[in-house]
Length: 124
Image 1 (cartoon, helix red, strand yellow):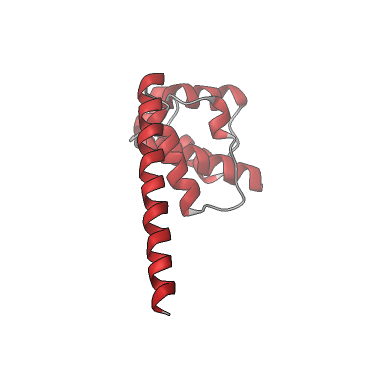
Image 2 (image 1 turned 90 degrees about the horizontal axis):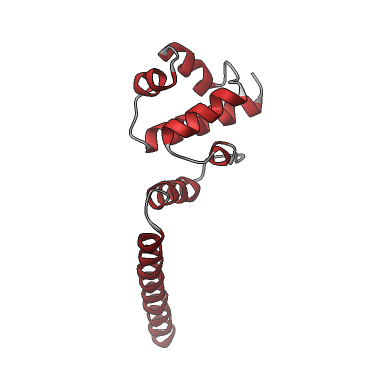
């Protein structure tokens, strides 16, 4: 088992979980046994490119999403994955609305943080 097999398997498992599917459900949708999917997700077996493409199609994601492999799972990467998964199923107008709202929230957080820092510096 290589590092690539483990990373690809981990990505398949993460994307399956984001889609709200069990191993048994995904396995059924792509026509394999749950044990086979388990071996793919744990990196014991390497799926063919055709199989990876099937998985992406069933999960409703682009093939490239399964190959966004990182050296280690970080909480921020997982949060970004969840956000990308959520908005990728929306219309352009909905994505733009979410982007605008998020930008305003983040700008507010930045202003609040700056105000708190200035107040703390005044008290020092």
